[in-house]
Length: 433
Ligand code: PMP
Image 1 (cartoon, rainbow, N blue to C red):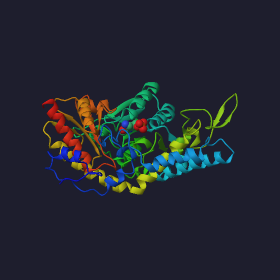
Image 2 (cartoon, helix red, strand yellow):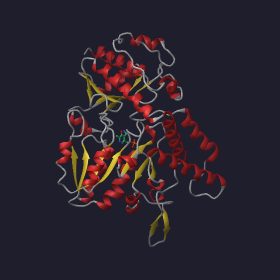
Image 3 (cartoon, rainbow, N blue to C red):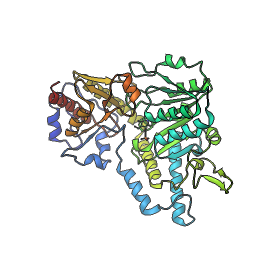
Image 4 (cartoon, protein in one colour):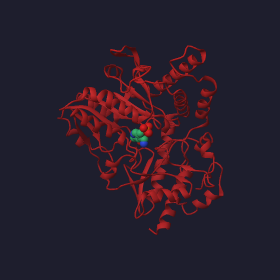
């Protein structure tokens, strides 16, 4: 069945004519309407509206978030936590209200457990430097996994190098899932920290974080979870997951460049700051310094007010649409995209097949470099990422240097996936493969 896009373009219809064998499903969200909230998706690029399939790298921003950011600058901007004048107090109130929103979004037990950071990478590095360097040493074992984004792998290599702790890895199965046997092989080691992602950004695998956290705790370790690819797409409840740290990234969930780190209060209390400077101190003398209370101890410098307010507006936006509905929508789109791509000879998809996988379709086309695939798709108005996705060990496991990756979000329609599949057909024709 042909389903017209939001504006029903002739161009798109032409592109689809070859691919009418697979019927497009209906999804729980009216994504064509949601798309209207996103000004950039309503603007032509090279004469076409974009089929934006790169939200795993960074999502687009709805009018509601853009307006919230503009509103801060127009009505409430001043240095947060520093000024006694009314505008300064307003700025502080809005910044702290944003923290309350993110606290509720993650269902953290207390706002003291939510630290604003620049992005997920900074959140994970905060744990590595402030927890890892203080509490790990020779003889201790850090467990990470072969599917980690470099942000949850390289910091642990650094901690191991600096402390003398040993870094070991949970291996991947050929379905792109964690090999539970290889986790059990680590049971006898003196494991002190387990760092694992909730959702793989290059394979789409969804890990059972609650089970990994239980395993970590049973073995006397803390669990650090990279939630960058999960929090935008599913309900995340850090208390139910039971992890000790959970890092998220606002720019992947309709917000600006900003992130948050959830950390268990008793652990954060025991840690020293990662960065030091103004605002995070209680008292400074020439002889020494004492730290401010949580969460300010970990937030030196003038806080990024507009980013925090935009981040909270994004959390409100996806919450209002409903994370269950977003998740269900993506499940349907993912199954559809998987079916379309796997029907094309010479296309290889990575990671576990649907259902129960995230909306990340990582694929190669035999005989064509991933970057060429992405470039030809761009000529069709289809935006996908190509490369190793900052997961070189996972790529190596599958013996590829790069894949093309299409990732879906709440604003994607089945039309976007039809255009992707039609674009891949075009890639094959162009290269004669
Ligand atoms: N972890 C995962 C799984 C990711 O996909 C990404 C972004 N590609 C990151 C961490 C890093 O996120 P950020 O850009 O917010 O630092």
